[in-house]
Image (cartoon, rainbow, N blue to C red; front, side, top):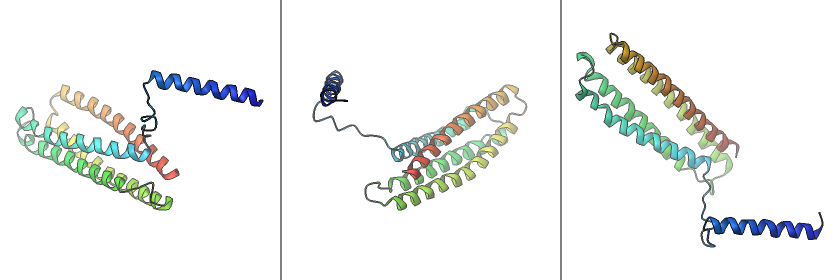
Length: 184
């Protein structure tokens, strides 16, 4: 490529960027205000979302007491178990979010960041090892509560499959972000 061709290509690229900026209404002051979301930001945001969802679900769990759907021995036990489960999940997510917020990519060394990320990933897996069996117990109790109602069993089964699929997808996203943080 000659100097003239290089200069022409550069000017053409600059002209296209100027047209795009004008079309998007980007001013000189706002040009560098775009924050690139990092894997650390994704993890923190996702843990915050799940903590909020867990807290909301803990509150909604008590609605089962007034719904009069559950049979007598389960009508108070299951809502409290569900609320406790969701509250525990929310607290674990808040703890992990706090751990990840303590990571400062600008001031910490790479080895320190990698150690903290590995620690958070290990805590994430330990939390899953606690929450998954509790969820299975609650699901088994719900199935035993509605053993005579085929439609509820089918509904819970479909909900469990959908929930499992969403859970696996979210787990893979968490692990991708942890992997990117560990590699960088």
